[in-house]
Image 1 (cartoon, rainbow, N blue to C red):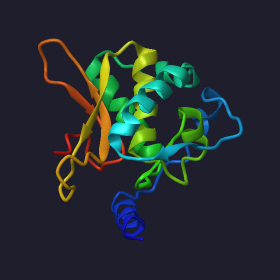
Image 2 (image 1 turned 45 degrees about the vertical axis):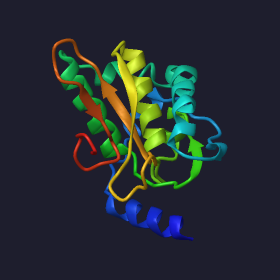
Image 3 (image 1 turned 90 degrees about the vertical axis):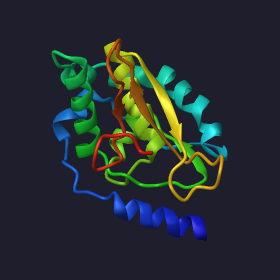
Length: 176
């Protein structure tokens, strides 16, 4: 009960009007969509699953990724963030470790996706574009010690600060 109330408050806080995005439908194949339930757990439980989903499903965004590519990595990362933020609703999922492929996230975008599914989508786009990245897990304010409750993508650059793709937030920056 407590988790549901907190999740509903977080979902409401990050709710926004999303664009229809129908012009991208042909770039992301359609199929029967369902989230994959991998058990209840914490963010540690999810990290390997997120990476696995990125590896297994990045092909689903192979036609979309070039549309977001820009002349610089910085601008490409901005394009990825803006695309995800403006086209996919956010919805917190609490302890349920439900992770969606990019295809599933796209075709259920109005219902919302959590930080794990956003990270899968962003990571898949980076993988298809050859952009090195990692998945960062963080402890948010109000979490008990050692409880990591949020994930997002970090893009690494040589001799430059890393870049963030945290598309469930109103601002694309670090969440500490």
